[in-house]
View 1 (cartoon, rainbow, N blue to C red):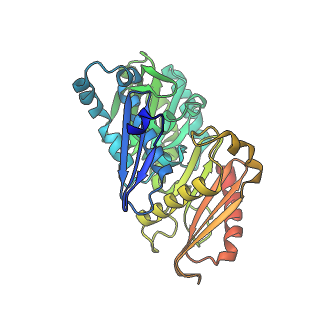
View 2 (cartoon, rainbow, N blue to C red):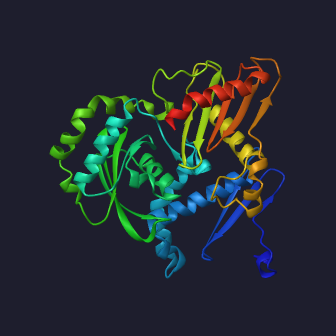
View 3 (tube, helix red, strand yellow):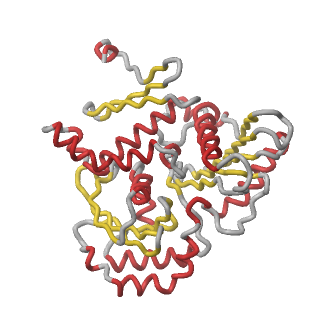
Length: 368
């Protein structure tokens, strides 16, 4: 506030063990985040604040946040967003809060599910439909994929953060597409952990989505649906040929704004899944802030960055601990066109990392 009076913009500060980042939205709401996690980056905290404000708009609407008439009433209304915001602060299995890309899984029979979803959404009278397992998108209609940031990330994350229910009729605002006029998010549980989501206006009423309509479209694809349920943390279909040295991976498609994230390979080996997620999240932050250019259209992108894109690195790696294979961790990142792949490995020698990443990216390219 002192800086603002002197027309100086101060966006972050550090103490010996804490990073403080703050951001003002629409000259109305200021959010402040403090983190004492070792190695926390400002990029991660800035994106966290963007997600938190997006969650507030999603559940309360922009008008309430920019034209505050009654602070006490706003505080009450914002309670609806606490569960979603808490899920960003915890140790989530998802990574869309950081990458600003939609967490996805690859179902074994995606085209069948896609067909059923498109047909069901049309029968229900909406163009926006998706299948969500554990907060990750299994399949979605074209219109759903065209949703802007941050709602494309926030909606499946919201569904994954809510307690299980057979059906919901949930009012939501779209922070990018419709921040002042609410839509309805209808959810129906097809199988435990697998939910069908529709985004619509006043119609159809939830009661119109009766069991007969559900059976007509989803009974014929019951086996492919069942195959999706265990996909959550795994992201990739069972039996997908990954090299045995890979302990975790993050694949981003920066134009489609979608990502695959898993730490399930070789789950019986060290480190734990939580540690693997932390390593990959920290490495993503490092390469995004230091080595690779900001994603197209992101707030961090500047004009000079766009001009220098022809000179960016295509790969980088990090070795943590001793160089000998089987000790410490190796992380490698590879950029190829719109795709960026990050791998975590323990066994691979340093000189083999690039080959491992190139081969894996080639294998994953048809999936995303």
